[in-house]
Amino acid sequence: MASTGNLWWFTPLQSFAVIGTAVNFGGSALQSPLIMPMLQLREVPAHHSGTLTAYLLHNSEYFFPPLNGACTVTNLALTIAAYLNRDSNSAAAAKLPYLGASFALNLATTAWALGIMVPMNRAMAKLAGNLQANNADEKSEKELRRLQKRWQGLNYGRAAIMIASSITALLGLLEDGSVLKV
Image (tube, rainbow, N blue to C red; front, top):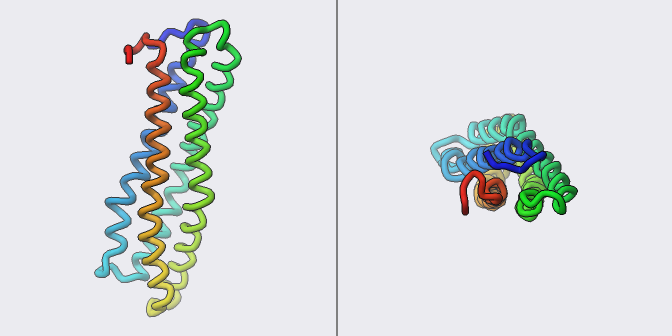
């Protein structure tokens, strides 16, 4: 474990932030190349595709946003502690830029999700409801398919922010050289 003196708790919290953001990335990144293309297949009727899309996005909300929130709060606490101890603890001073960057990337993930992804999720859920009520609604089908494709591409952007946060957090974890010299 990394030695940080009286800040021994940095290592477990940083490890959580690394693993949490990596899990968040993995879950998000796999939705774009694996799940969303299957839901866009013409062989999958739009009313089923809409129902499955709404189900996937709704149930993902129970796990991934709280995980991102926990990682954000963890990186915020670590950043504050590193800042407050930067003059008395060389490990805290060395880790501070990485912790701050990882925290900022967590915030960017949240902003991306709330500003871009959530409105699309809501629109797709509404369209799914329209298609459940009337599976011959061609306008809703066309818009659902368009939003699924757009969501797929924009989700890669969110995943890129997530993996950047994980890598930055990992570099901060390894920064003092007690675990591994980078």
